[in-house]
Image (cartoon, rainbow, N blue to C red):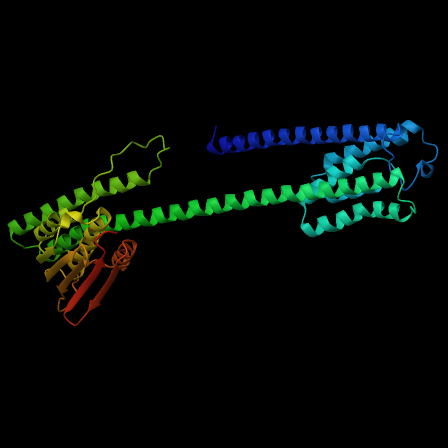
Length: 401
């Protein structure tokens, strides 16, 4: 069986189940309407309730009592089967029948359906039409002491009650749909934020590794006769960066995979780098040939919040990556200072080459955007500037985000 056959079979089965439920629900409504209408007929014929007829059975001459007062109302109840498909038509037909035979319960059910399923404007004029027979009946009666008048008022209240209940149900349905829509929107926004966070993480992690690959591969390409030791060192950096990039990519893909995926394997989240790993990051870049001068002036660095610490590490990582990509071989000066009351101030400055390096990989400014977003999420600020011979990245983050 093909994949398409399985999908179609599943949809067909769901539609069949829903269709069966709808059939049984419609049968139950028709049966309830028939029982209530039959009870009304019996009560009216036994004098327990005087049904306010506008037209008597004389308008239907020749019909026996059973046909006119029992079979015709029950036949009207059958119309309830189509109340959801043609709610207005069914309601109007039953309202007209109310002038001849006691089918008020069936008409009330139809009016409830109109109020619950149709527009409010449609509900208004259908309700007005439904109340018209009662209005005409009361207008033709001079004495308001009649039991039929009381029955007419009761019928009007039944109509108003059915419409009101339908409008109430409609309001509940609209609120439920609105709540479901808002919940879906919140879930989509949460997924979007998660995707953006993963995209930033992927860019920060992979860009650092891939830039090492690009710079050293370009150096080997343009210096094919470099000393053997330099070639060996560059090849080692390329091999190490490629291996780590592959590990990082596998980690990111593991995050993206759904836990419900049968092929997914439970993974342990590796610890995220923080300010404690800044020395290792600097040494790694120095090993790749960068000339980095570091000035650290931190008071009680261990009290920096984990979120701020991770954010600052990623900003430094991206700043060094940009310097390596766009100014290879140039000097980089990194300054980080801060205290609990003052926050953390970061400056990464690098000199610019006289000419744009031909080995530099293309940039899409995603690194600058990512650094700015990370700083904003931590409650800090980010800026960058360029002069004729220098490029500077500046960030300020609160001590505790």
